[in-house]
Length: 386
Image (cartoon, rainbow, N blue to C red):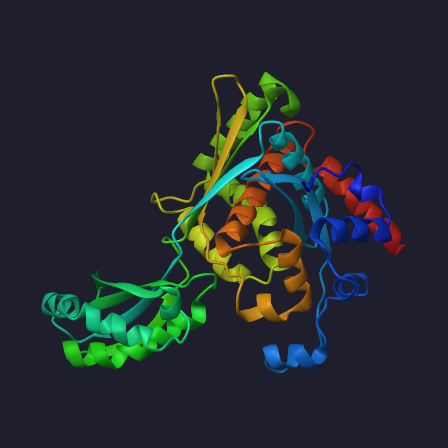
């Protein structure tokens, strides 16, 4: 069985690191060469097809976090980030979590939400009409996808809500779409645009915006872990870390920085696997405010034995088919290193890495301060430039 615990991985040569990854993930020679010779894995011809007015490509470091055990499976976790100490800190946190079995994570649903804005209608009458014709709307939406209905997925439900603004009221028709292993933005937008004319016909109104919501509350992921009190540094350190959490949970100025650190871990994995990091960040920070004020994205407490228990929950829309994930050679390699079987597995890894990074940052802040390890690595970087 593969073991993600690799002592002193950071001290090994480039060749030694690649050998470990190849053996762990069963990479072939072509894939190994992509990693060995990569300057980002993206040539200009492909970049020019991805965006407008392309002039080149821009690379960031790709590293591996070790020691991760998530839902009883060991992972070497690819992370793309420019900030020093993040990968080392996440690896150390995962090592401590492993003492109590590692991370436990779960995903609640994989429904993408599409929204159609309807103006100039009788709201209540239109809601009744939409509800009466929901089967027709769902059938039309699914006609725009060749693959999802065949997999038993696609549009599943139609919902309506009224939004009152200072100037008027509007109807919002929402499509609930099971997008399978895809992130789902394109198919959601396509389905919204496909059904908009029918909704106009049914309501007599005008449809304006027809687009997905990145606030993916029907795609929640939760990661938890127990960190041994002795490995953390003892009862006082555990108590101090909980006090640090209380600070973040009750002061928006601290919460923003606290949550930035959480997302250092989550977004690094998202970057490595070709995800839409802006969508992930936007949803996460909206969720941080779902109680009515901006709070910590993580929760920390003690169990009956005095061990530190962490929990991280966010709405998370990611995919392992389509888009950059399928076409960028390094993103494809990173998903192979993770040996992903489905999109839920990737969500669990992203959330667990975010929780690990938050633990590491809080522990550093509550003990030696954040700068000791951070600046040590920063100094190494500066020395290499001198």
